[in-house]
Length: 339
Image 1: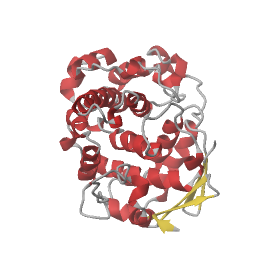
Image 2: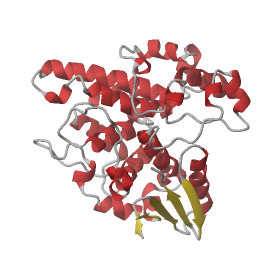
Image 3: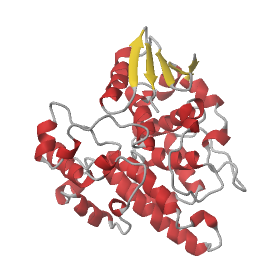
Image 4: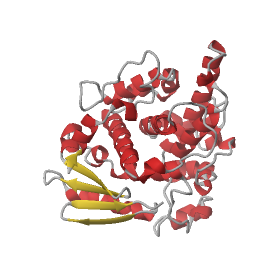
């Protein structure tokens, strides 16, 4: 089996850089493999697409190194998963997409690189003091294009329609601004605002057509719900008391119900740089090996230098909310996908 580091090192840029075939393109340097940091990589990717302004309200310069390293590792892990499994033959989004370029690299770049953009803002005391509800948050963020008013296709409606209640629940019970909802709402608004500015500069360019807003909403809605947990025996009463009864008894999320969340949820849960956050990211990537079996099984081997139980428990937790099967033995984990 090949290490995750080797997989990333050998991954061709055309498979992960959405802008690779664009005119006047300049290559992006992969973090971990080069001196380019994860934060620099994220900034450079957004800038390539004329979307660098989108990140400013996220205070990206203040991102923690651990969170940006996780994000970058997640990005490449996702590209590997897509190109080596049945995901590559599946339809993630059934709306008309406005681009002659591949849809997956575009939607994965937006979703993955922004999914934790508000993580370090969850405990912002200034925000916590004056914001209690999702409506308060929208006012604070000066939202003009409301993600929550959109009819987003191929997304879990149970989760998406519960965002307001879940935001209040997280604020009340956990004293936190849910980073998924925060990031999803802000990302959509900023992407649409940026598109309108760019379109005004170049009316003849198809790159900034109105139809992009549906793709933006798909990515942003997936981000908004990616941190929403289904209730267990310990939290069922809390959910019931905070307007979240509709999530009690919800079955595992399938690819058919919410394809991008299903995809993101698997990798975000087992991504090893986050799992072993106390270790050097490059060391972790070199001591985790990955293989793909019959297009439907992810096989992970954990080196003896890392605590096997940490990743094993994370992988096993997938079965509580996603339609997968997990087994493990001899420092190896098998995750069987379901389509």
